[in-house]
Length: 173
Image (cartoon, rainbow, N blue to C red; front, top):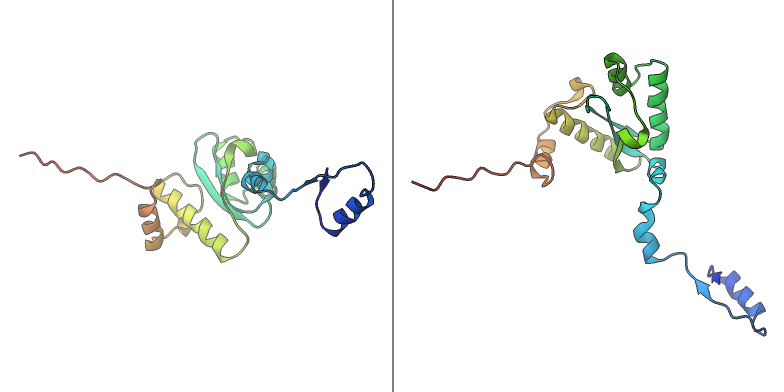
């Protein structure tokens, strides 16, 4: 079987034209591969960048951050800061101040959005910090969280989070 790649494949098949060898072609670019591409080993997702969330293993408080580097690289920076007692991020400062453990990347890191650097990344991070601050379980600097009508509207419209069912009216007299 030959993977079809273009002119080179046709050239090779012509070499075997007058022999008893039969050629079959396979394709690497299939719909199935496109549909399952993101379902590779969990390590692959840590090679991307965007918005992430770290959960303190001891108290379950959340830290939301962004990175333009791979998630695994940013997590290693948190590990290094924790190991050398540096309070460069609010997450490691929280762990150090409260004498909490750090945990494994697979256990405490959740990737929220995969996206490149820029205003979209900044906006996504701000939104998720705001959302966790409203829930009361956020480690990030609380002084940076201000009221935001747009974020409030998004949270209220989200069918999965921030939704409370309307109270049923009592129709009995």
